[in-house]
Amino acid sequence: MKIKSFTSLLALIVLGLATMATASAQSAQGSYQFSLEDGYTKYVEFDAATQTTGQASGQMFFSDEAEFFPQDVDGTGQTQEPFRGISYKVQFDDLLVNRNQGVMSGVITDASDSSLVGQRVLLTVEDGDGVETTDKLTWGRYEQPKVTWVASDAELEVDPGVGLKWVATDAERREDEGFSMPRDEKIGTKSFPISSFDFFEAARAAGEIRVQP
Amino acid sequence: MKTLSAALKVMTCAVLLMTLSSLAQAQATRTWVSGVGADDNPCSRTAPCKTFAGAISKTASGGEIDVIDAGGYGAVTIGKPITIDGYGAHASILAGSAISGTTGVIINTPGANDEVTLRNISINGATTGLIGVKILAAKTVIIENCSIFKFRDSNAGNGRGISDQRSAANGKLLVQNTTINDNLSNAVVTNTSNVNMVLNNVRIHDNGQSGVYAGMGAKVTIRDSVITGNGNAGVQAADANTEVYISDAVISHNTSYGVYAGGGASTVRLSNVTIGENGTGILAMGGTIETYGNNNVRGNGAGNTLPASLGQQ
Image (cartoon, rainbow over the protein chains, first blue to last red):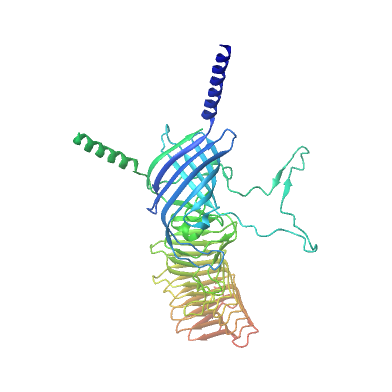
């Protein structure tokens, strides 16, 4: 009898902990179809959540029917053949939630244009439920900065270079441990303060965005 | 049941239409470009575009495109009043390659009061570019703190740094703190009736033809500038009713002429100008050169004699 009671109690505790863990997990989900001043339909579908480990995961699909005019701005300068429509899938690696706003970051894993694979993406959303404003979002796709050189001593035959890493500290504070430089240039949820994101004003919009703090 | 079903469909459609709400449609007054941006981004500070051409469609009339970091931002056609400012970064337009080139900036804004400003931009023709800045329509164009160079396409009308080809009269062009060099033809050309062009603190050097070519009755003011090493004239006034005022300038080492006044009734007025080491210092070939008695014209292969001074007024 005692064993049964203990088992029941343990089950309840485990269930309770699981419920607490689920309840405390931050998440952002939704789908949104909209068009901006260009009139072309854009669609985003996303689902991200933090895990009990503190890490976040999730996916996003984005498509845009707009016409693009690619230019080789750093090479020949030539305008290439225009094309219409772009889409890509993103695997999220981070989620930052602040009240009814969420920022998700990730990397493109599949795209209509293979050159986009590997680029970083930020999706920032605002859940308008219970607030006078409606749901809002904005997004960004970022190429990885190309650093193709390393500073080295030309007078040494085999100098691997300094790797451009150092620790920045406050010389006036002995206890300052400093932080490594250069700062990580990889675009992530903390690259910009949430307040700095400008949500666009859509010409037409439909969908639902939910953010769970 | 069928009536209820139809009513439900109507309600569903109504809800859907309401959901697809027409919100305020507005382009951003300020947009941004970055070397790591993308043209399908909204061009905001946190999600910048990749090119000027991509940003311009997302920028409101009268708005501004700014540059976050150093990069090449591509040739652009401007069809509305706008400012493009590369302050704080090396903002470049590469308009040529080893194979072929294009025009760096085309300005074609039809509005009667449209103003376009290009500021802090390097416009590089890379030896095959057609024209650095081609102006087809705009009330006012301002080019500040720019470099325009190496537009060397040899087809007629190309190889120019700035080519003002407006058909409407009374346009304004202000170029200041700008360098225009190494272009195949004339560096600055205005062929527009009654255009008012001001060149202030401009360096124009080593272009294949004239440094400044003013025709078709243009009114040009050149101040505080150096015009040197050009293949034809430093300043060439062509066509009747063209008037050029030059003050506080150095015009030297130009192959053919320092100052050339041709084309019937063109007039060039000189004040505090040094003209030296040109093939011919000054030449009035049908036009008129006026001096205010404070110029320095020496050391040219010929044409070292100014007409009688009008005196300071």
